[in-house]
Length: 265
Ligand code: SF4
Image (cartoon, rainbow, N blue to C red; front, side, top):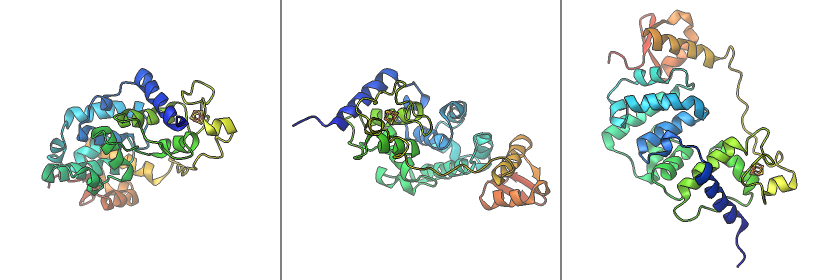
């Protein structure tokens, strides 16, 4: 039987990753808590920005139990500057569940607060080394362009490497804009989209990021920064943004003052 070109491409990808994949702290562990923290931080945030946050977080809360023992406001304050603070609230909620009940079985990771289909697959692949490919928006793009017939699977025992390699390929070469097809892409040979000149046409369309300047995200961020720095912020600084933080459990109200979520309970 003729060798399957897609399976050969995956083998090439794994070899490339083994030779050139960067050494990142969450790649040195298979600890579920460390993988969950890294995956949640990496959602919509570049690796370079995540690195100092991840190091500080894991030094302070090396196990889910350590975070669960603290008020959620501590997690939100430590998240300050990383964006999308509801991720910190969800991580804290997940830590509370794990501290109380232990980790759910792999097929039920999505029972944890804030853990969706992608993050559950990332836990299965990057912590448990199960043969699944976690498909975030970057990996979906690489699959659409390079494996239009669908992901062929990784060689036996290589799912972890293949998953990490797909992340790196999507970030470094098979980028959403200006893909580096002819600038060193390790999977250029035999790439169906590049060969046919239809890379752009087969790229799944993502949601456009809303403008940050003047947005509710920016106004909420301003209040959360004040909470992290001063431990309080007057509600009338921005009542609408304050209400939205309270409604989401990202801050509490004490009279006319906004305070960190969970403080004083
Ligand atoms: S050749 Fe281009 S489209 Fe194909 S995998 Fe590489 S970067 Fe992506």
